Length: 312
Length: 206
Image 1 (cartoon, rainbow over the protein chains, first blue to last red):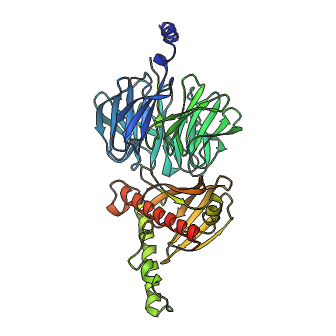
Image 2: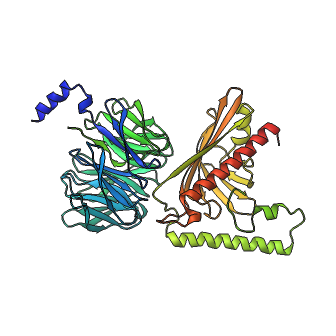
Image 3: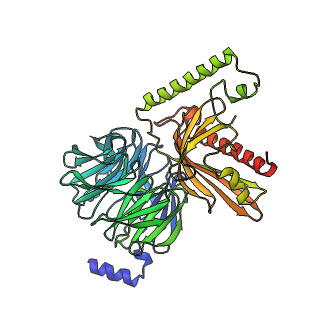
């Protein structure tokens, strides 16, 4: 079946099979859908409530968008580009991640010390998970068993057992971790530590930091591609790149101003960087480290979370 | 005045030309205590001094100046001299124009603002800096960072003052004076006054 689909994709020559990027424009109160084949916006979806966080389901069917000022989670039909429903939440919903199976959806409360577990089919909160202060980025291991939360004001990550909704461990990291990213094998996690200007590399099973890598000024998010980590340094308007095996610095790439969201394409050949101040998305060749394209999006884009939508 | 300050603000003190009386000394002391207690209250309120809201704001103002970028840069490009900003009375600092240089601005009326230089590009006529310490009663923002850029525009220059910041209130449901709108207005007012004064200074040599 998969090979048949792949063949169809080849016949369709790209555009029909290209992935999309779902860009939350916080200042603009909407979401831009970028067709990554053409680099053009194909839809602008009104969201409201200053949307920031994004999580696209693994099958590409749904997108979940947090609005911290509107205190809600919007559920989108990602293919149709339509908001299906909005779930009101307390506090300041910001970070969001969706379970590999499609449910539940986890939302971090920036003002609380908790994560909401949400059943998107019922449109209801099914559990609250106690974590540290100002939980920000969320990420799940590919096996769906473990949830990580970057607890910004606690300077640590929480490790949550998805089966019991209980925090089972904390790991001290750098100062003010914001984004947290888990590798494809589910072995390591990377936090971007905004105030200590470094990345903590965490062995998830061992529950400990195995390395700290210095990066540029005010790192927010780590993306992984081609055996490298790509880190958005907000105040430096650049991406710091290091080798995940040797942890050696590979270089810096100038992008737009105040880059935040970072994610690789599914094939790992491209890295997409969302530039909050410049209102653009930079596309980087993960091998040559050159910016190959700049795409216009809405005002104040963040896309904090996993924002690439695989198209069938 | 552009910056919101305590009731006995800069104007009241500016107008006086005679030596300070005992009353004035007492006024200044009282004002300092008010500022300090406001800062203490904020820290008590948030628990963490550098916590901030969920939505960063950005704004910018521009001015056209009838002078070359070189001339404008001589006035605006020295991180250790912020006297082109009308409310600034004194600039003290260290590190010159190098990355991580610091400066402390003393404002008319006595409040202070501490800042650090992130990037400085003399050939590109631009620098980026951030506030490391300010009372929200003085400027109702947190996590403020800023960029100043001078660009050639024919035989004139365009100066852009750009800022990114969170509102003064770090939690949900802010009071009006610490809201997103209040933060944007205060920063815009500061930028307009600063750039207006910069234009006068460069064009008139005042």
